[in-house]
Structures are given as structure tokens and as C-alpha cells.
Length: 449
Image (cartoon, rainbow, N blue to C red; front, side, top):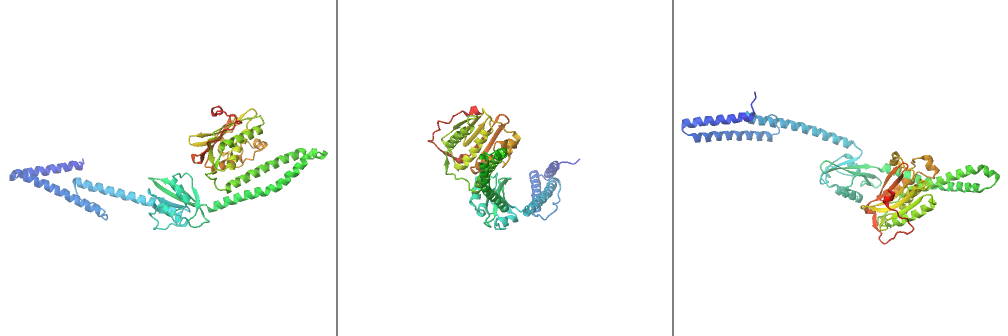
């Protein structure tokens, strides 16, 4: 049975001390003999330590020194650890080499940043898209090389859920999408992608929609004019064509509304984001929508309004009016006779919320994620019969995005819907001094909920 190296070492020490004691008794020098034995034992250990140090220092040495007992076991353990570390390093080198080869082949720029936001490594695409140089830029802080103000603000903000688009530092006609991806221990990846072609295609799409919509307005106006004339004709022959003419006129009106919505979306795409220093009185806007839609409902649907006049939004009044108007008109349109529509403007924590609640037909849950897509309809026949264009909620979403806001939708078939526009605190402004219109009919939010 193999003994433990420690047991063997203890037995060796005991044997040395016993032998030294016998020699000391024989020579009548017991203390001196023990001292000499212990000194030799310590010298032997120091020698083994020296051999260990020399072996560890000389990395070229493949095999450990020969020894026995405890030191032999120590040499063997070090040797096994050394071999495991070599295998681990070999695997890590393989992984790093494969990672660099794969990222080097990527068309997107990849930049590895350390915990201090200094460049550790980048691929060849970074040299092409960001004009980084090897090895000069290794160790540089990323903001020393990418100085675009929008990227600096994005980098310092710490919110990296979405990428940002900036002009390339290499060429002004190149558009880059930049995104930071945190990983590991406070490390980050900077991904840069050339989106110039996508940007051009999007511009072509916007221009086409705007130009086509604009050019179609003139012939549509002519067609509508002739249809109006035919509708007013009281001759015997006109009676036979009255219903087809009325249907053509209705479809022409629907096409006119679609063109107007498309032009509005094109204008929203083309304009810069709304300023943050143009206050809009949302309470007054909500009361105006309330009055207008009461007239449209003509008593068939009750429209109520409750607002906080002390809170407004910094933004574009026309865009907000268009977005809110679409929500309120949809609520009135899809609420049956005897139902209610309630409009709210209030603070929810630090956010501002514009909310439209109705008791209408509701929306099946599977349709809610797609409601803001262009031309998407839950019920095509019902939407067209009520004059819908399929663009209203797309306009709402686009206008809200331009105001850093989100649209929250809650609905149950047969029990109504709730559309909530949530604006961040950065967009809110104090409008203290405005008073609520007495004509508005206030209701509590608890009643609507």
C-alpha cells in the first residue's frame, strides 16, 4: 500500500532525529548531534527549494528534477499543473485565434474595449469604416477616435438597447450604425455597420411615396369633381347610375384620405425630430378634441375629458394633434351607440400620459402587436365601411417616436380598449396657470377603468 508523502517525510525526520540521538549518546554530545542533524535536514530542504525555483524559472525544462518523498510529490504536482496550464493556454489560443479570424472576416467593424473604454483589439473592417490604425490606436480611449457628438452622448448615456446612426469619419456620404454591446467584466464591444445603402433605399421609398401621393392628388381632384357633378344630375338617365356614382365618389374620398395620410407620414419622415423647447398645451388640445368629437358623435357616443392643465409637452403641436386626433376618432368610430369615450391627460409618476378609453368593440389580443403597421386592419371589411385608411395608428406611432414616447395598448373583445401615450419626464413642461375649460365633462379615471 502506498504511503502518503507526508507520512514518509515524518518517518524520515523521525529516523534522522533518532540516529542523531544515538550518535550523540555514544559521543557524549547529544545537543550538538541533534543540532547538526536538524541543520542538515534544513539544508536539504533549502536545496530542494532551489531546484524547484530553478526548474520553474527555466521554462525550457520539460521534465521536473528527480527527488523522493515529499519533494518528489511536489515536483510531480507542479509538473502536472504545468501540463494542464499548457493545454488550457493552447485551447484559449485556439479560441482567440478562431474569434479573431471570424471577426476579421465580418463586414461589420468590431472593436473590443476594456473596463476603461480603451481599445484592446479591432478587426480589419474597423480600419476601413472607422479609419483605425494598427498598432497605433491600440490602447487609445474610444472617444479619442470616434468624436461624433451624437456618439459621445450615446456612449456616456449608458443606454445601449438601440443603435444610433452617424456620418462616417471616413466619408461624409457614408452612413454608419453604431451600437455598444456590454459583456464580461465591464468590457464592451463596439459594432459599426455600413447602412448607407439602406439609408438610400429608405430615402427613395420616402421620396416615391411623397411624390406619388402628391402627383395623384390632381387627377383625383378632377375625378372627384366630375363625380360630384354626376351626383347632382337629376335627369332620368342619372337615376340609373346614381348608386355606382355614389360608390365611386365614396372610394375617391377614401383614396383622398389615404393620400393625405401618406403625405403626412412622408413629412414626418423628412422632418428633424421636434424641438425640446416648444411647449404644447396638451390639456387645451385634449379639450378641443373632446368638443370636436362630441359633434362628430352627434349624441350617439358620450365623449368625456379629464386633463391636468399644469402639465404640457415640449414638441410639435401639429404632430401631437394628428396623433391624438387619430386615437380619439378611432375610439368614437368603433364604439357602438350608447357607449362612452374618455380622454385623459395626467401624470403617472414622472411620466406624462395621454389616454383614450372606450367601451367599443375591442381588439383580439393576437392583432395588438401589429396594429401600428401601415395598412394593417383587424377587420378589413368593417374598417373600409367606416372610412378607415389603415394608416392612422402608423401615424400615431411615428409621431410618438419623434417625441421619445411609447404607445401602450390594452383591449378585450366586446369590452373596449385603452390607448395610452406615455411621454418621458424629459419631454414634459410646466404649464401652470392654464385653467380647464368648464365645457369639458370631467370623470374620474377609476370610473373608466
